[in-house]
Length: 265
Picture 1: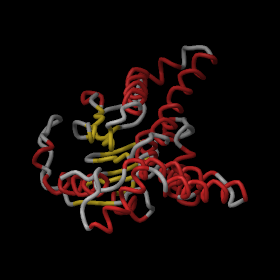
Picture 2: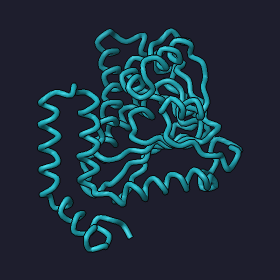
Picture 3: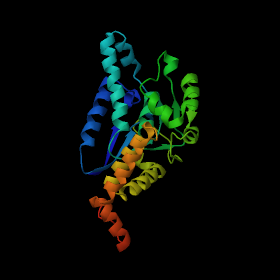
Picture 4: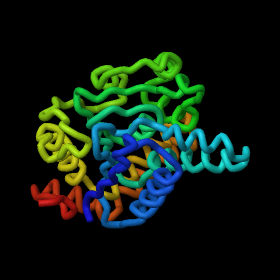
């Protein structure tokens, strides 16, 4: 399979989150995580918006539900963020339009984020009397508590370069077309596609097993103090990797001056 693309496609609703979209994203992430042939996952969207955040009609309807139903609904959104954050393969967020509210959570849960220079971002929740609760752990980890406080409390918009400077984005590329309508063809955004392909090429050049273990390592280091348990984990990890099939293949390929078996031609 190689690379899979998961596309937000509620174009008429600016890809706003509702219970059905959250359900489908959870379903697809669970399914894709089980595919042994998958090497990387791209998350992107159709239309002018990456996502406008929560669907306010859905939020209004949830006000009529019981407290337990609201908690279950919120749990599903929290599960989506956790599932994307812990996805066992490298994930790439590709942002071509505005990303508000929960959409920023998705971006912060991806390993690599690429956006066009015209993308705008906003934690809009407090303007609607809401709280960016389920995304906060991932956002604060990504941009830091200081920046999160400012932008979550003010609900001010910020551009792609500001997001880049806060470490929310890794690449900002020049837009190579102007959106004409909701179904603008992405094929013409050559600069963005070139950057995405460049990142994919780098990922596919690396050992699938090493990528998986390295992502797990990063997540664990982020959550754990530097104690004896973590030190033992890291030493055991490198010991295991050295004698693994791909670990041995990588070293042999280096000395033989040939591409390793996993590298795509």
